[in-house]
Length: 309
Image 1: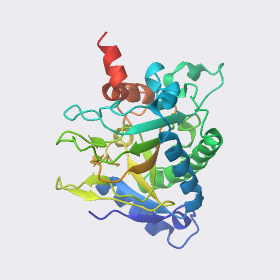
Image 2: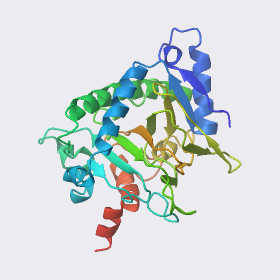
Image 3: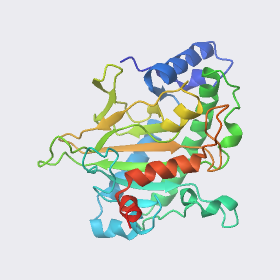
Image 4: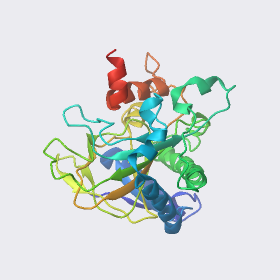
C-alpha cells in the first residue's frame, strides 16, 4: 500500500510551487488509501516527545491513583480508561490498552455544554505539569487540524473554507494510548485495539516511534505504518466518509501488540455537535453528536452495560 507522505510547508501554503501536487496526494490518500503522513508542522519532535513522556509518566502511576479520574464513573469520555474498558470490535475481546481522554470544555451557559462531548475534563494531580502540557498540545493540534481540513476540502472539490464554520466548537478528543507488552495469555481475539475504523472525521496520530499500527489494504492484507515523533499519521473516519458522500474513505486499522510497550496520541477532530453530517441532498439529517453517541455506546464497556439496564 502506497501511503502518501505530505509536507505541511507545501500543503499549508497555497503559493508554494508544490501546492497543487500536494493537493493531488491528499486526494489520492482520501479516495484510495484512507491514510497519509504529515511532516514539518508547527509541532517539533521535541514538543511531541514532551507530550509522550507526560502520558507515559501518568500511565506508570499505580492503578488506584489513576482510578481517581476513571471515566467509567462519569459516563463521559474524560479521564482515565482502564485496560479492557473498550471493545471496538464485537467479535474480539475488549482491548487491553489503557487511555486518557481530554476535550473541549464550554462555559456552563453555552447551549451545547449539556452534551457529554463537552463534559468537564478530569485532570490528575500528577504528573505536576500534566494539565498545562496536554492542554497546550491540544490547542496546537487543533490549529494543525483546521489547516489540514482546508486542504482536504479543496482536494475533494469543495471551497477551502467549507468546514471552517462547522468546527468552531469541535467535539475534539485528545487521547493518550498506553499499549503494554502483549500479555502472555493473549489469544487470537486479544488486541491492543482490534480492527476498526475511526468514528469521526479526522485523526492526527503521534507515536513514540515503536511499531504496532497496522492498516488494512484493499486486498484485505495488513501493512505496518510507523512514524517517528514529530511526524503525524493521518487517517479519515466514518463521519467524513458519510459527510463527503464517499469522496473520503475510512480504512480499518488495528494494534495487535508486541513484546515492547508503546505510547501513541491520537487527536480525533470532529465538528460541532449540531452539525448535519448527512451527504448533501440527503432526505434526513444526521447530527454529528448523534453519530458519535451511537458508536460510543457500542464501544465503551460501561456504556454497553448501562444500555442493558
